[in-house]
Image (cartoon, rainbow, N blue to C red):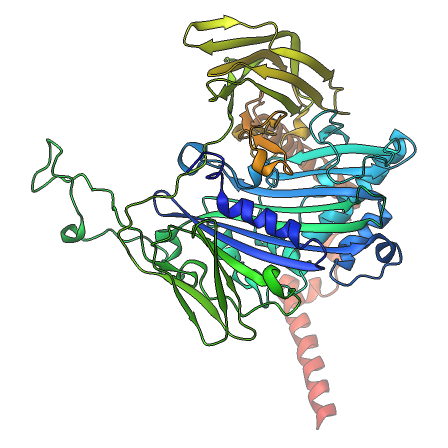
Length: 600
């Protein structure tokens, strides 16, 4: 099997099938692919479309009305929204789903093409869009203000515009929230955008307890116009994708007993080839057989039948399983279903029954052949260097594993305003078999927009070339700004999140996936800033408040209190203080006796 044929066969089949059924109004598909070390990749794909005329007339059928009205009000022509958690392990899991084109950085990432006549109007409509999406998805998108917004130049081109369509009035704006915590409050609005709303179809498997317990997960929403090249009528397409990597053993634990229990000693298979193997020490031997799992065990319940809005024919093959041809797969359902095989038996697709539960059961089995994992076309890592509270440095390591071809890419960084880079310190080094040396020709183009304090962040965009079988190391220094004490969050000593860098490959060798661009995102960074001792302001506030309370209380008491003599108090002569108390008691008794007589 060649390298290109092994490039995520299941995902490619997903894209090709979607292209063949472009005329369908609604389409959904689930791909399941086992990964090494008992991991499982589950990729949920939902796509629906509507005509441009129906969209302008607000005649919504499968397109969600709540999102469509927001796009119309904000004059948004193309929208891309990402909710992501975790880290994709490229060395263990291989190439990313959808070549990274449908995933975002840690937290929330949003970019859109807005139609406006001026930049000021575009910024106003961008803020309107972010605030409306914040309310729709129960997220903190309203915090994407001017300090977290940039205008990329080379990284995010329009996806599906016809070549003859003018884009002079379109403005691209991009914002990130790396500190945003993605949770089930964002999943519920996501499901409400679907026609079946999680009641049937593959969306019935999406449960917050399973999705947010995954090792890596991302939710994406893409809205774009699709215009034919011959100048026909355009359609507006919305694509919703949920990708997650689940741990099979962890997901199979019951919800009422989530604590992992150690395996009994007699059930552990030890590697006896180790020199330290004895009766009291054991190195567990990796299990060679494929683990047992089913949809009900992994997701908590089976699929609740087919979504009645899906199309008939090949597009109705809703669940696809990418396993070895000899892997045993049992279908558990009482309804009528069909099964078909593609790509030499590596992909098995099933048509869901109507109104009946559907479950797939894979028993434990010894399988000799493994499905080859597609190796990523590129690797990227980023870290903060240096020490101290005043300055620091940033280092990005970009690795090209190809032995014979260089890689052209665009490197984008959106930095907060309090992280001020020194562009004159930007250096590019190449590390290969010959050692490490500076490469002046590796940086082809630089786009830099400096930050303005409390107004906008830093926008750095580079076009780079990485030689074959080598690593390109980018380094530069930056200065840390000192914030006002009111600008620090409650967990200031934790540090400040810096958005991941976005990498777009310009000349990828994945010709089988040419319709999708190849993207990578590094992990987010944690930037420590000079942090004052917040106990001192509190001490000053407490001491000042105490002194003011004592002084003000004393003066107020002197000014307001009235001093009278003892002989001026009624009842004082007759019995003194004792007489006053007895008189009050007598008056209270008289009141209660009067109330009792009225009641009788």
